[in-house]
Length: 293
Ligand SMILES: NC(=O)c1ccc[n+]([C@@H]2O[C@H](COP(=O)([O-])OP(=O)(O)OC[C@H]3O[C@@H](n4cnc5c(N)ncnc54)[C@H](O)[C@@H]3O)[C@@H](O)[C@H]2O)c1
Image 1: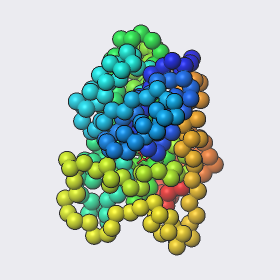
Image 2: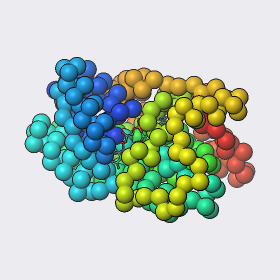
Image 3: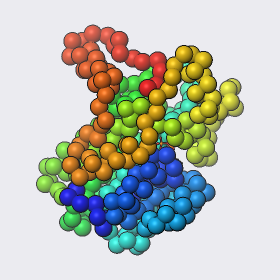
């Protein structure tokens, strides 16, 4: 994108966390913003606060697992602002499954695939055709994660698998847009280099009835505070990256037309190198980490 001034940006998962920060940064760049989220009340609150702060913003309750809902988001965007230039497929959940992978419920998989993977596919299918028709600059930003996008944390198979899929989907989208010499392009976003202190660790709050747990939980739902206490007890200090820093990187990446919107860190780069070398040399994985960070 040559400029963001006067453009229209849609951000899914926009009620809080990283999505809200991206929306606020877009507004600071002179964009009109659509925040979409499945959680109605937090979305309403966020939109009201953003308006009070002077942002030109609307909120659209959207379930990204449902294509009709994402089509309705596109239609609401067009009827409010007349066009759309940047779509951040950012809504995501940590499935929070209990026990080992072979004990996980199929609904843990269906939920993660529905939000983290199909949410991105729905965003592409609903928005790219109108963005191409506009014959103007446009950009899709899909949120992946170092967990899966670079290499998986074995304790989170649903999350890692779906975030790996986001990278592949975005590479294919980029390749196809290049083939037709489109004015629309695509990027994949890796938030970080550290974890973000957001609602992701309490994703159960956004779990819809359609993907409800099949069995009662054996352990209580986690909270950020509980996770921090657990990690502290294990002698691990959690380092956080502020969401504003990631939002800034999105804007810089959009203006530079970077495909990889990735902070780069020694640890992350080593991880990537170790995985690539394991594949290249056909050696068994030694890079699988036990803890996030
Ligand atoms: N938190 C981290 O450390 C981290 C690291 C790497 C990647 N990410 C990714 O960043 C993105 C933003 O996450 P976050 O950290 O801000 O967490 P968050 O939980 O604060 O935000 C995610 C938002 O997505 C919304 N959402 C969930 N299901 C939805 C659905 N079906 N339809 C529409 N919205 C839905 C939630 O209500 C929530 O507001 C996610 O894709 C996440 O996987 C986060």
